Image (cartoon, rainbow, N blue to C red; front, side):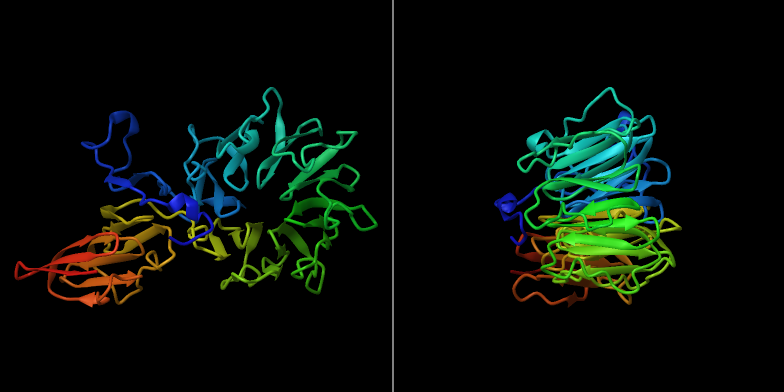
Length: 424
């Protein structure tokens, strides 16, 4: 199998998917009829669509979004449970994401963390009221209402050792192995690794309102709308595009930087091997931005979302509406659902293009199934369309069929004459 987490794919994953109908789901877990319940490696976001979001946070290869109703949803790579919604899922006002975990802030100032618990990153402090949070890789930062910062998780580079005096902070930002805080006087304080000068804030160190950290660089937004960047510039991640003015938000990816201008357009620069430093196709009305390892997610004023860059773990796919489902199918590392309108939704691992559902004129699907790196759908008229890394000898279009079945590297169809045809 492909991907940076190859060791996690040593054996074929088994997914269990079911239609959420009253007869199949215990009363305590009843879902809306026609929705999908999924468990295992990949989870579909129940009841979500991309115009619900008010903010988003990107982890390494997953993302977590905050809805306008105070609930959260996560998508992308989720073996540690970071893509499973927290319970109870309500009352959240902010989200942050690390390499394999999420951190969320509730309206009452309490914290909730879930996912991998590497170095105790899920062991949130208690007894304090928090107003802001940040996360990166394997550590968290939380700002108390009193201006004090709490930090926990991996501390191999001192990224949790908030310098004295730990007071008067108004904003926080986390890098991979360093941390940043903004003081009430507009100055930035940094601690942790300084291997590339990511803690050396350029003079004058004043007027900052927000900060963000990458692997070896830091960026800060000033109240006058300018961006200051410092640290490693190996990929041009410090080279703020001209004019350096009218910015309202900025985020550091691993080796790139993205920012939003006051006119709602997004600008990105730095490493671009996965398209992470390009602009979104529909570049308008953005108000919030987050950067992952090599992908970005941006939120518009109307709650819609745009994402671009690396997508091998569906970290750019985002949540989908989970209603009016009539059929489902599961591949090795991806899932498929057929809607009442005859469309197919696909999510999960996409190394073979198995989640790239063909666009119209392919329509009228009534069934779907998938294998290791491919998917296929059966239409009402008996046509079978297949896409992705197809089994040996299989065509992308087969006619005269009444049923389909997908194995890991083989496929079968039942023909109208009662015969079975197979490939692989």
